[in-house]
Length: 352
Ligand SMILES: [Zn+2]
Image (cartoon, rainbow, N blue to C red):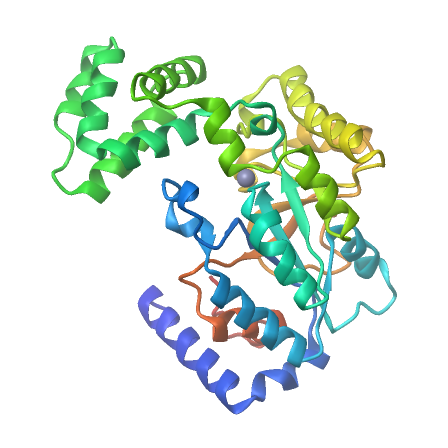
């Protein structure tokens, strides 16, 4: 089926099933447990520089939680979800909520909302920023937001010594979105990780950026983590520096994973059973990553791959459904009810 037709049909069916209430009929036949994936909640000014696909507004998230509560869904942490998946008959009325990276809005905006709905969630925390260190991507987004893609390309060209890359930067498209895409690809794949970190940090500082100030305004700190933990929200590990694990030597992978685990254990004074892979596509982690997670005693790890989870889904490759401000509620709710999974078992694959 052509992609556009598939999307059109998916949206149309989602609205029909949602508006008629028919989607509820699929629940008892639900063949898997949904795990929803979010990042930032609300639009606090200090997160202006972060891209829109990571954000969901407070009213939209409240509407989603209201729908789930009205339909009788129970929200679950990932640690609870691992138990649910092991049950002889997995529950048809659960949904796990997960929030990646450890943004401060998860404490300031999300936590009161979870309390309002008597809901819970898992927040995956990257611990480097909590100790004042931001990675290259934050530096990149921050400078991009401040000066725009073409001025950033000029700043990069001053720092990069290879002539062919400078030539590429000089002839970026006049279209800002395209220029941004090409520039990010160049940074990701054409220069080494060390150069990338160093160059972006240099530009960030030259533009007046300060790691400690930005990190504190955007990320949770240890006290916020303890407050979430006390309120029944699970905190999971998400590495120290949010690097692509499969690109690291085994000992570096271990430092990244174990570092975030030990930080959280020290702050919360109890074991941390849940992990989320940075970036989360199947090529962003490998067997070495899984071995390290097993050795460290993690019970589960979530990816950014789409789908529901059942007893046959490996606990270290759990799937999620990404939700942001652009998501249509009807589609998200149909995913949670298992509508699209049911249709695909009957030969109509509208999963994206
Ligand atoms: Zn992340």
